[in-house]
Image 1 (spheres, rainbow, N blue to C red):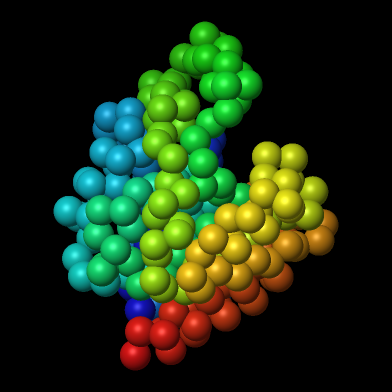
Image 2: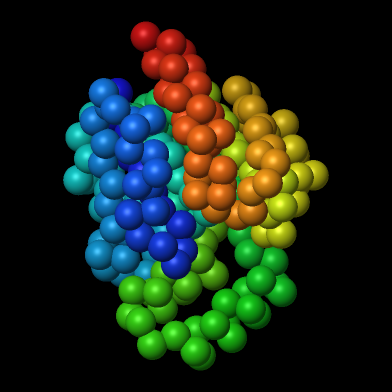
Length: 198
């Protein structure tokens, strides 16, 4: 199965190195989102859909999850399953937008600056979750301050095939905090997606 790995902010595609073993046997695409240019989650999603051929499973952490949702909005027939890590469905709250505005005043790295703008301005994707027909796995760290468990449960409850996994001993970046548990979940998700679409 083709797997598109979408990294979190402020990381890059190398954040997925701990998952190399779990992805053995799959065709993996792991782009650097900052290198796609622009400052829009939707723009990145469109570029990736043009670069990646055929159907795929999307695995996105935080910012990468928002890109996965945007890809599913544009091409639901191609996204066979979604595994999101610490990603919420809704847009930034006013408080979160203000925090990003403050961060923008401090950033000198062009890629991170544009990514912060993309995060701040991303649209609500709740409708994508509600309408997505394939396997939808949301992984949340038990110690994640950015995605509280009650909110994660609401997101999953709205998905037709939603499933939540809360990982103990992990914060926002679960694949690094608890790599072995995350790899188990990744393998289960890919098997679920493969079975659901065969």
